[in-house]
Length: 71
Ligand code: F3S
Image (tube, rainbow, N blue to C red; front, side, top):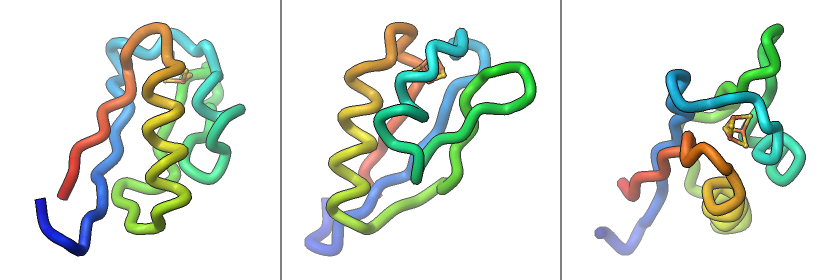
């Protein structure tokens, strides 16, 4: 983990069931596709406020479909 910490962000399309909590909690990071499943708006992120929201979204996804990894 470096001092210039950022994250990589992914939605696992096999796990996402369209609960839409991620797009409600972090619309800057997630959008819903035509089937109502989440897609990442950003694949990587360095803004601390957005990183915080990514973790909140991950914690609120009932399917554990959101993958956040530190860069
Ligand atoms: Fe899918 Fe979870 Fe969002 S199920 S729509 S990634 S809250």
